[in-house]
Length: 450
Image 1 (cartoon, helix red, strand yellow):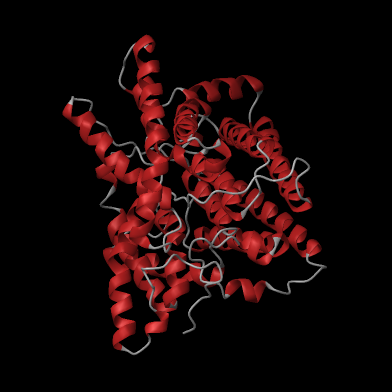
Image 2: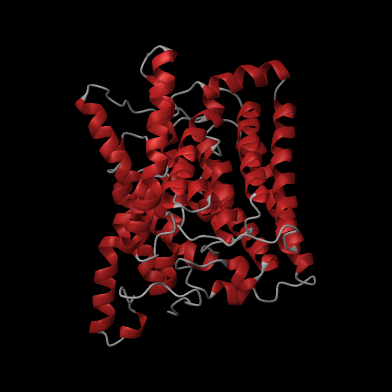
């Protein structure tokens, strides 16, 4: 489901790193260790061990809520450890804690609640490493894309555990598939960026959907049919909402204190369009970014509670992905129109607003937030509406192997709407608000006023 982001190459930092990077590192490590600790609060060590084995050996196709097939404790343990490993990797490589990197790390955590784990992620990361070596570049040049490349992690698990193959055959086959995916994602994600012109934040989701579509077609050709999966948990909304909102409050307080006990500057951040690349950390500073992340997390949880939805693994994953991308393009002003559009689309089609599928479409649909930021509030509603219509009809193309299904759908939404919106502005004599598809997006692009 999610995008992810961009193939921008963050610069390596000096060995000591900056103060800002250190703050982000401490916050992320504390967050990961907190998730691990909560795992031990929810489950006994024996339950954690059993649940972790279940998670690691699951085919993990979309939608596999680890809280449903294992337990809440083991799911938090999996997410905390996988994200902690990613945070340490970024730190060891002295990579700047940019908005894109923060988005990537929160996306890793979110999807480790329903699809990603150490076993199905490592082969893909090895593929990205191999691609960097073949290109003659450092892996740190591909830090951002490596964090998002595990969108197709279920393909690895499917090969190892999902087809009934003996492990001596399934393991090398899964590793081969994973490395191949890792090799394919970097060039493909660079290529598809031109299709949506930076107006869909989950760029890797679009790329992964294309690769997944070909992979499923090849698997079907040799008789390896991919079956749909739907396993979600219920009954944890209260405790998960409380924990998430407490974390949002902590982020807001941290940002508030770093901003000299003020919210000054947030309004300026909200005027940005969010079009890629929109690194709020470099553009507006860490303090405002943390407060925006808190606001977006509260908005996401509030939306779920408002429509009577359940906070389970996938939905909570959506919430944390939204929070991550609040450092790289999303804010309430450009995201609310998308939520409204998805809700309208669900209402028109008779879908349940509180169903997991519709909630995921709303939360992950905010990948189109830059489109609302560039064109305006009403156009964002149209984008959300179309996304709701499309997202339910593209999953079969990749057989649930692409966790970033909404990023796949949103790429097509942007591809279809951009020329129409541009034509409308030109006809109305407002060419300045149209997207210049012949130039890359500028970091200083601001939102349209309407």
